[in-house]
Image 1 (cartoon, rainbow, N blue to C red):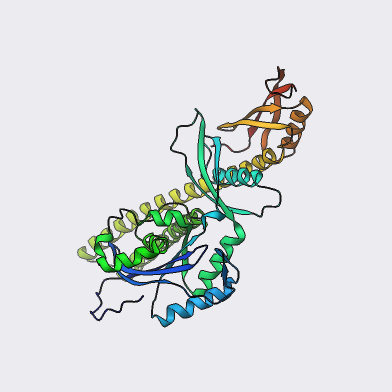
Image 2: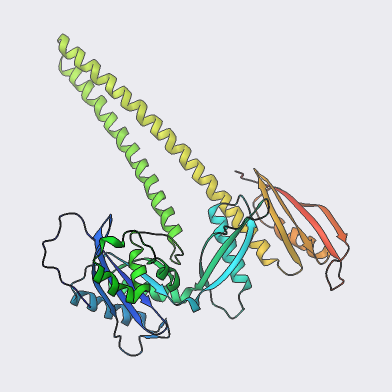
Length: 399
């Protein structure tokens, strides 16, 4: 159902968003508008009458055609949304609890969680997209537990194509159940008319998806972390450009001062005072620009070191994840350049094979060694002996 307002629009900037719920039985859509403080109008809350063959049982079969249909639907309703929030069926989501060593960087955590989740899925399972948050339950010392949710990557890409074809930016992709919870006790629902709110709650999942524009948080299977890093890199590049422009203005200031002094062979007292002040101001600007440049150089050096450290972590993490047969890694610790791995193996041969695989990586200042390798009494029902090992090495770059 649609509501058309004949009141004059406010001059403040309006936010218009779409909540698209792709459910197992039907697709529902809610369009909200409002200010930065909160939503104030429910423009649309409907169950979509889609043509046959576009969606079946919560799965998008023809993403391009569905996006075109949505584009036409929004244009006919004269909706002009800036963003879209999409919900998918909870049956497509798998849940995992993964424990990692504390102290890992954000990129290492994402890489390790992706590898751990993919390893526990069946061999026939496709690649997945994940999102995660810390487990509120306390973990053991030196460890952190993460609650991870995963969906097939093909499903995520299909829903992204729907938004792109519809001409709306997709900002979040989350399970329908989390979107529905967002409508419970939402503190800004009071800004909406009671009748509009009641009707929108009949499509509570789509309503909760649209409300995410004013209360962001929760699972998002889109690459939002990578997007934030991209924004930070752009900010750093902008800082470098500002520094370069500051140097150019400083040079121009010096040129003006010198040209003014050359034109007046016998300057007056007022001219000398003005030139002195201009020189002092130019000198201050030069000092500030130099300090900014030094900070930029230090930041660039720090970013390069972090990039090299990340590449090293990706390499040894890949070796540890591929050496799963016969070897169990209990912990990985890194203190500066010192790198230590502890675990168990079914035989000494398995432990030596892991050391040889690690030695082949070109990331070591001191190659991996095996200072501890001992057999312990079997504690499992298999009766097989267990070998405990510790591998130590020094990385080329440390934190």
